[in-house]
Length: 246
Image (cartoon, rainbow, N blue to C red; front, side):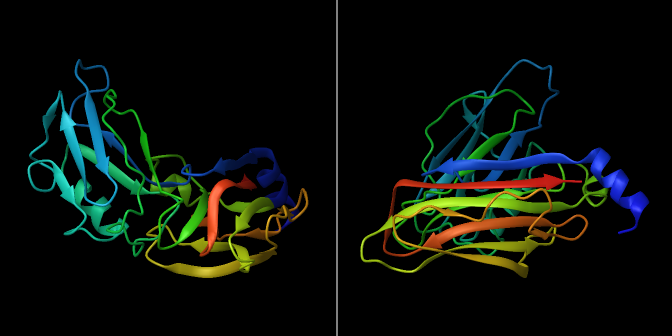
């Protein structure tokens, strides 16, 4: 990066990141786009963690999605398959957030969500269940673009990781790591492992604050930070991720 590029990057730099506790890591997001944003009416989403996601419009299951409005996890077993099934309908949009297309969703990995209505074009986030019996974890994504934003615009930006802070309690002193991965826009797989921070049981791991990113992703790529493992409980656990978009 030359001096001019560095000056431009600094001028457009924006702080990004999140601090989450149990059940706050976002797996994917949806929005209803079947009517204009100003139109009367509402949508809703009911997620049964081990079974299905039902999408409705004005209280009626939307037959343009899945099987009569139901996206069954026995059929759509991965995060990518669920998002694809939703996007087949012109009434809805969905995109993966802190996850990979290959991540399983058919074993209570997603957090159950009872019905709550939302207006057209309002973004609704559907979280991971951090106490899932298979893999326990917290996940945060640093994105180069905005929710449901233009891919052309996102590819003009980069994200960098500046700090990671996390803590969990394990049941038997298991080793636990916080790992930062670079993902391409399709989130098909991990493109590159950027950094691994080794944490200790019941001890806060803090990478330390820095103005210069510890690691950066390429233009248009995102950074997925995962605090995952087995044998630990999500009660009292937290993950803070700080970064920059430029």
